[in-house]
Length: 90
Image (cartoon, rainbow, N blue to C red):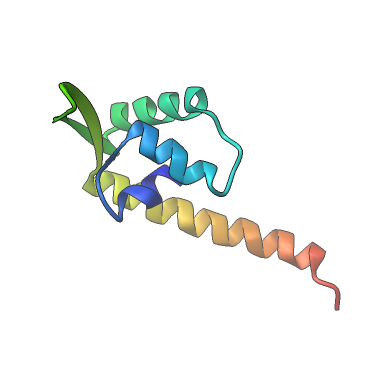
């Protein structure tokens, strides 16, 4: 979900949390380790921008992050098809 959000625009951690919370129950303490892991594996880069007298850290998806997202999308479709097979009421 984080990678998909970042394909639309660069944004900061708290906004990512709020956007995901509109659809799923998730806490900031859950998402920040995900952001760090994605940054560590090269899927995200960061930059700081001043905001109200302090710096706000923004996240940007990388080329390898886009490739990882595409892999996740394929895996999700495969998984969804398998689950749909059992849930389909024919």
